[in-house]
Image (cartoon, rainbow, N blue to C red; front, side):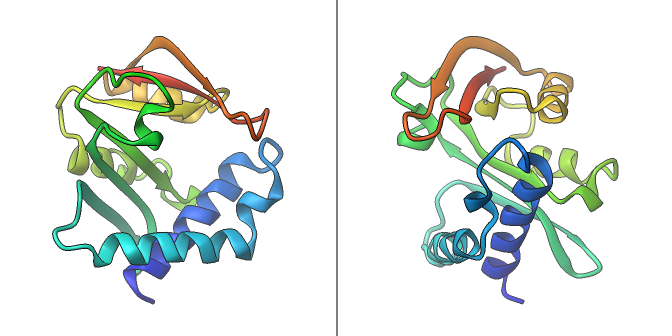
Length: 158
């Protein structure tokens, strides 16, 4: 399996494991996988690659990944002025990797101890707790996706 395929699969499956019952099933479909595969193939092919990227593997299978970079663009801003220069765009880990230290290793690899910002889905208690342990706190900024009432993201900064 290529890195792009492994990252795309980890992306979709971690969403299914985390958000089933909260988000619409279209986020976990094979169409969602195909879209993620296209995105990650393009991202990994860019030279130089923007930002920072790390993957976690278990038995030579990608079970998680993280990427961070400059806090520019719609995914970082959501219509708001960035609070920090560095943005954690994504950190996803399959349930099989929970409690193994893989999530911490991913965060450390792409953000380290630098000031940063991120968006977290409201109600994602596991992620919020993880970010709080790593010094992040809510700054009061909230983004409501106009296309999906279940997608309410809260910004955290450190």
